[in-house]
Amino acid sequence: MKTLIKNYLNTFSGLSREVWWLALITLINRAGTMVIPFLSLYLTQSLNFSHSNVAWIMSAFGLGSVTGSWLGGKLTDRVGYYKVMAYSLLGTGFLFIALQFANTFVLFCVGIFLVMLVADMFRPAIFVALSAYSMPENKTRSVTLIRLAINLGFSAGPAIGGIIITTLSYAGLFWVDGITCILATVVLIIVLNPKSTKVLDAVKVEHPESAYKDKSFLIFLGAMVLFGVIFLQYFSTMPLYYKEAHHLTELEIGMLLGLNGFVIFIFEMPLIKWLENTQHSKTGLMLFGAILTALSFLVLNFTSWVGVLVIGMLLMTFGEMIAFPFSNAFAIERARKGNQGEYMALYSISFSIAHIFGHNAGLQIVDKLGFSNTWHIITLIGGVCVFLLFILKRNLKLSKLKQE
Image (tube, rainbow, N blue to C red):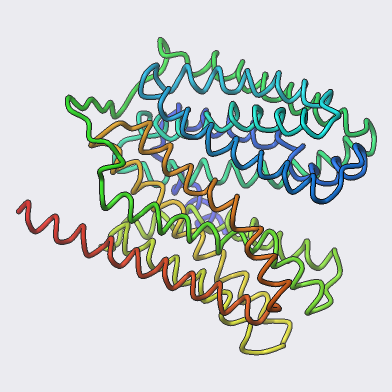
C-alpha cells in the first residue's frame, strides 16, 4: 500500500509552485460557482419564470460564455494573462452579488450574460498562464491537475450550495459565490504577482499566425465541438434515461454520476503520466478517447441489463480522461506558433458552443425519437468526431513529412 501511495504521489512531482497555486485558485473559483447547478430551480421557484423564459436565460448564459471566451483571448494577447485573470475574478465576484437583485426576465438575461462574459474571460487566460508556468514536458500533467481542481470544485460546490439554500436561502448563494470569487482574486494577487513568479516557458512570436488561418486547428475545433456535444449528454439526457428507462432512484443516479468523479480523482493523473511515456501522439490519444466515449452510448442499446450503465459510465470516464487533457495540451502546443490568447479562446469557445446546442439537441431528439434512437444518433456524431480527428492526425503527419 505504501508503494502504491508513493507511486501515486510521484505522478504529481515536477509541477511548478505556480501551477499548484493556479489549481488552488481554480478550486476556490469552481467551488464558488454554486449558483449554476441551482439556477433553473431558482428561476422557476423563486422568480416564478416559465420554462420558456428559463430556456432563453440559458441561451443568454451560453452566449455570454462564448463572448467572454473570445474577449478573454483578445485581452490576454494585449495586456497579458495575469491582468485578465485578476479582473475577471474580481468582476465576476461583484456581478454575482448584483445578480440576486435582477428580478425581471430582461434584467436577468442581461445579468447572466454579463456574469458569464466576465467569468469566462478567465478561461483562455488561465490556459496561457498554465503554459507559461509549465515546462514543456509537464504541460499535459499541469492541465490534468487543473482538471482535478475543477472536478473537486464542481463536486463540492453543489453540496455546499444545498446547505446554503437550506440555511440562508437562495440569496445566500449569490453572496457566497461573489465572496469566493473575490477571495480567489486576493489569493491570485498575493501568490501569482508577476514580480514574484517564475515563468518557465515564455513564448514570443515575432510574426504570429492567426488561429483562423490554421487549417489543422480548425479541424481540431470542429472535432472538439462534436466531442463536447456527445460528452454533455451525460449531464442532461443520460440522467433522464437512468430514471425513465431503468427506473433508478435519485440516490442511485447520484452514485452513478459520482463514479465519474471518483474514477477521475483516483486514476487520471497516473493514467496521463503513463500515456505521456508511450509513443502515442496527442492526436492519436484524443482519437482513442473519442472512440471510448462514442462506445459508451452504443453499448446501452445492446442489453437492458442495468450493469451496462456502469460499463457505459466507465467507458465515457476513461474516454474523457484521455481526450480532455491531451486536447488541451494539443491546443496549448499549437498556440505557440501564433496569438496564444486567440488559440485558447477558440478552444474554450468550442465547448461553449457545445453547451449551447448539445443539451437542447439531445433532449429534443429523446422527446421525438426515444432513447434508443438517440444513442444511435449520438454514436454517429461520435463517429464523425473520430473521423475529423483521423483527418487531423493525417494532416499533421503529412505536414511533418513536408518539413523534413
